[in-house]
Image (tube, rainbow, N blue to C red):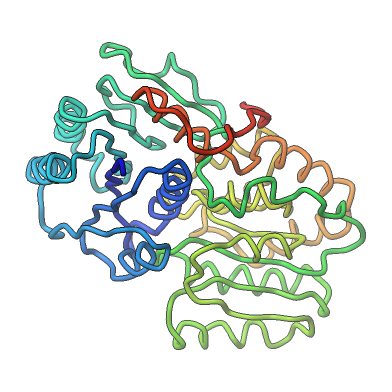
Length: 367
């Protein structure tokens, strides 16, 4: 069986969005008869557990490796595993601050292996590789084209778990007030304070019989922190710990308050009216661009959001089902859940391999 190495990291600081979208790619590769092997630094035990739970192989890297050692280890593993294809998703604020070293890293890997680079943060000089940026409003002309990389740009290439494919089909149109809300501000530790303020805002802005599901942390202590915030709601409420897949959560929600990273695509594809908060600085620009498509609303940085600002937007959305309908229609047109399949099809076709599964539709609108 052909092998693809997937190099990505996750932690309480970096969050788990990179791992989530790479797991989506892994499922799409596996559907086409290619074996994914994850290669990750051992920052957070949740990463290895998620990979193994999904049924994929995991190869650990020491957390202290520099980029040069990282590249050497990755190239050596590719040779050992006879993997011609490598996916690199290291577009995070830790790695990309070393712009020259990061560009050298990518160039070294691409010199030895066919490479797919997931990029939603940096404008480094990319090698001759397949470069994927799923955010709307991105254009090839913004990149350095010296080495002639191939680009897959826009939400048609948002990499989501297979459960998000056409997830909103058959879902009733939004009608009446909001009955169920979901809050998922990412897998890192940055969202805990913001979660309290968001839940207070929902309490102020929505009817008391609404249900609220919250994704927060991975332990019972974390869950207990938010139990009091949910006590005044009479609808079905739960604090959910470290879910591997948010599809069911969002499909049940009329309103989703999410981070400005990968989660916004998951919510959009599921047909929930989406409100975004930027958890880190680079998410602000992407959240604003996503709002400009008409697919979601941006409520500002998570660190600055107030209960009253959340209450205002929640109340407005609950009172205007027509506006929610327009948000959802645009969102599900923009993000159809087939992005991972499209990326994998392009990656395998560049190697001259045929797909082992039906080709995904190209129906999602790019913007």
